[in-house]
Length: 330
Image (cartoon, rainbow, N blue to C red; front, side, top):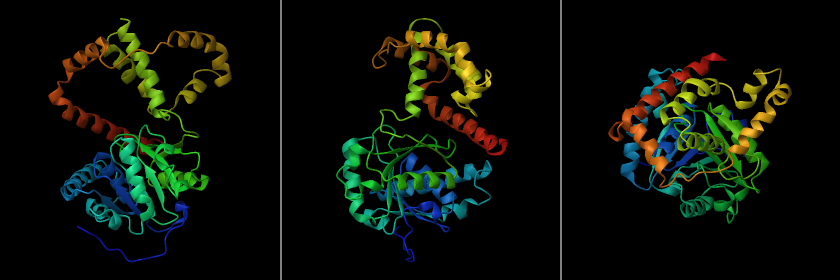
């Protein structure tokens, strides 16, 4: 269905200075688009979810209702009802209508560079001069799809971690021409809706999260490929070891506490760490490898492919419990 709003003065680029709700448009009604819609609506903002296929929007509304019901049961709706939050979410299959008076736009389309170039080229002339345009991309730097836009200084990547309603981290990646005011506005906005933003200070392949997790994944791969450990034991080393610590503190906080500060840690263990890391310099092939087949076979022993949806639900239940814990732990 289409929507109508009463007109009011647009919010300036410093979004965090607005006391009342913003007008937010989400482009794409898939999983990530739905999650963004829920996050913004939960924070009190008016959200328009756009998809060119009306049937997708109907499915999205039903899915968000289920999502909100789960968050309500987990005590993660900030004291609101499902109906109150859902009432802030509207849908529009027409792009121009969806972008009417938008103050912030979050693109959530597939990871395809040409698609993003095309979509941002369509969005740009339909929004105001102060409207911020963000992409949810996990791997494409913003300079690749915003270079030709007249208002490219308002563009930024705001990459969530799946599932965003349980994992609050958002990577903010500006292009060389993104306005510093936009970076700070989006950082403030993410904090205001309950997320945890980090700024990638310059464009780099993989941003922060993927570079960190790929480094660990590659070493895990080598340990299995070189027959140092089984896939099951590598997973246990993280889930029952490092992961427990890392769920509430980062690597620098960890080493700071594991010695008398960071400097002392580096004096004690630095040489050995450097020596081990030199052994880890050889990247291994993942695609089409025998190791991939071996690890997949190990995973299938405990979770058949047909049971992956149930396992994902199990993951989300644990993430929800952790989110509740972290909300009250500090």
